[in-house]
Amino acid sequence: MSIYELLMGQKARIVTIHAAPDLKHRLGSLGIRRHADIEVRAFSLGKQTVELQIDDTLIGLRAGEMQMIEVEPLL
Image (tube, rainbow, N blue to C red; front, side):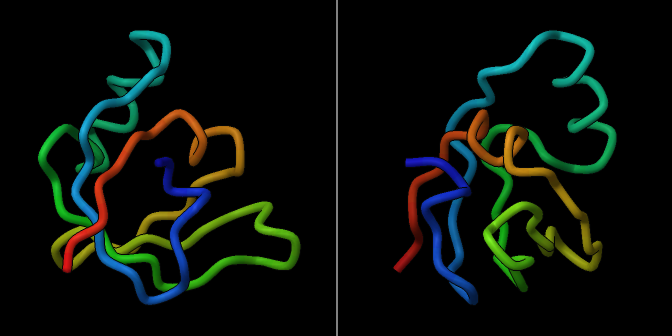
């Protein structure tokens, strides 16, 4: 399951990131790395972008980036 498939307000843990090394590095510098817990705060119209909360940081991602990040929902 990717971030794109989550619902607004849902929490999840990042399992893996299927991206090129440079994109993985950029995402890692924002706190998006394996085993990080995230919460979906909001989606734009048509799910073109998402606002995620990781710890105390809000991060925006595009649809293509969301689909590269595999997550497992938290209960």
